[in-house]
Amino acid sequence: MKRIIYTVLLIILLGAVTTYYYVFVYSKNHHRDVQQETAISVSADSLVAAYEASDSIANAKYLNKALEIKGPIAAKDTNAVGQVTLLLGDSDPFKKRVSITLNTKTPISQKTGDTIKVKGKCTGNLSDVVITDGVIK
Image (cartoon, rainbow, N blue to C red):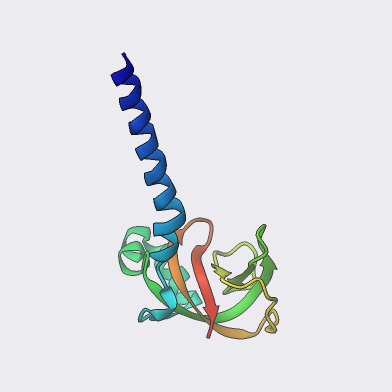
């Protein structure tokens, strides 16, 4: 009986150590740096048009790839953790746009209507095309 208890405790301990290592050590040291990757240049309007035409074709071309998106700022805000978020594209709120979350919590100097270029990782299409890990170029 003691052997079974020791075996179960050993398995639980190994699971806890493995989880700790993955969450706090491995994931911190093996983070993908999109800014060092070669990016695909695309305008905000053409990216939105590609996703509106076909999600599967656009996903094959853009999903999880580094993109450099150029377009006018339709809106800017901050999310719940304080990061700056931008909407690039048409200023009409009923049209699909590119939603970008920047890596910074510092407010940006560009205003709504200014054209900017942002590099980040495409994570797909929800109500808007979503870009994360963005940095203004």
